[in-house]
Length: 325
Image 1: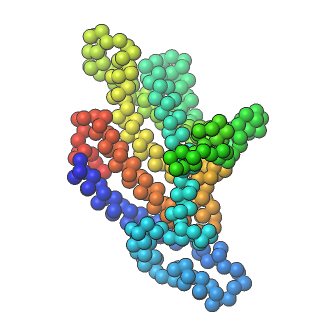
Image 2: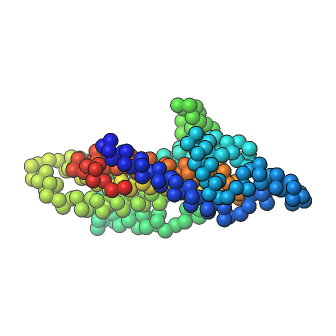
Image 3: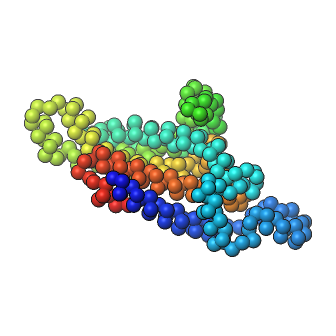
């Protein structure tokens, strides 16, 4: 296992370096932040001084090199707009995004696996067909439209849930969370459901496919022939084996939940990293954009490593040396 982890870490260094080049190149092309920061009536001398102060006078490859060197020291640059360390700004918003992502993933697992197993065990029933139809809608409907409909129905028409914001937060393990109070929970409910819909549909279809494949295996027939109860067959033998692909996909998808929570956070005014990156792109705040994207890349790398390790734990036949990056 140690050899596998070391090899993955070395690969991660290369991935981070390549991504830093791509990120710097992409951010460099979207516009000049000086146009946003300097008064249009400023003379050329003031503009040149601002460019030197922000380090924008250096070639892009030198800017990337300085960023990587400083990143190794924990410095991801300072925001042009807020004049604060970019890492500090992102970390301040991270608990809100992580809380929303974990809530969405929790809903996807708690409801997706049972519904998918039911649809797999009873594929021709009305309930099974209805579940699969609902999963298609979850894939098809755009999240921003669903979020707006949630706000109109639950907040405007019924008035039972708030339309946006994070609400009341409580200190938990050194972080501010909202799920420990009813008021905070009411604020997270709609954005969490909205963010979970696509992943819920994915889990349902994975669980259904896995159940239909596993239920006809010889070891299931043998367990039933031995007189093992149907409940134990489903909850032990079937559930354990369908969890292998589900855990693999959900582990990888968790990174995308964090990265692509931008739409949900914007619609529901959720004060997370996604809302921050939208504001930074609008203001061409390069250090925050680059720091955010590099943190997301690092998260994906860590999540992939954890998924590979969990995969080997769930299936002893898999050896980490054989798991492909």
